[in-house]
Length: 153
Image 1 (cartoon, rainbow, N blue to C red):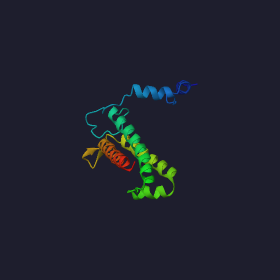
Image 2: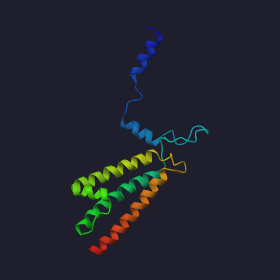
Image 3: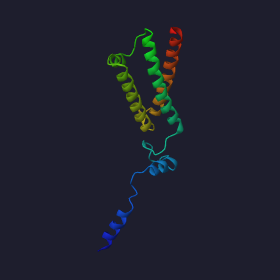
């Protein structure tokens, strides 16, 4: 048995890359890649830690999307029409298809935007700004629907 076999045997005993919930908790609390490592790495996109503001925007946008779906269905029952042609087609397949596709599309978009939050869009602004824009859009949309819901009821 030579030295490399002994090292291989020792490495097989403890696999540090094994996934457990301790790994998730440790990675969340003590993430190491919070900023760029070298000054010449201006284009670093992927970090272990994101600003809490992104968490607020992501959760808020998802909650507002759920509220939007509920209010849309209430307003449709009251006689209004769906302005988005894509969602109107999904509504033709039923409310379950509408709500499921709306949550899947919104959730997937949020995950992609959070993952690429440090990337630059069109080399001008960070994509995290798009998440802020979507959150603001959903706030305005929910307020608009709420006002119309008050008028109808």
